[in-house]
Image (cartoon, rainbow, N blue to C red; front, side):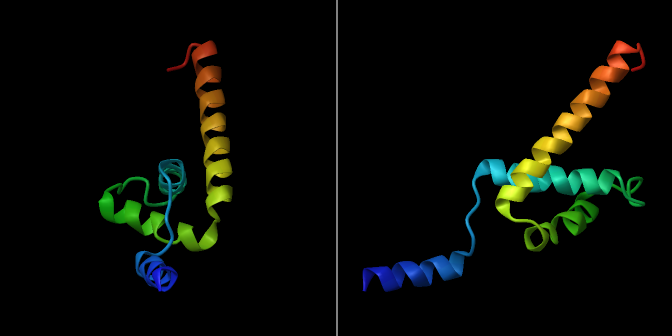
Length: 87
């Protein structure tokens, strides 16, 4: 009985995410928005528009790995511009 109640609760709640996973999906959504035709119209609605489909497109593990890759690339670009004196 307890397991059935837990299963019903899990179905109502849906999939659970830890902070790292939530942050990863948000970073991917923001990256996609900043590199889109909507980049001049950034607001909560456009951000949500880019964030909503990500759960269906990417697994949690993929999202974490991809967000890490995006951050690494951005840090390399920033370091390269700092080294060349461009800010």
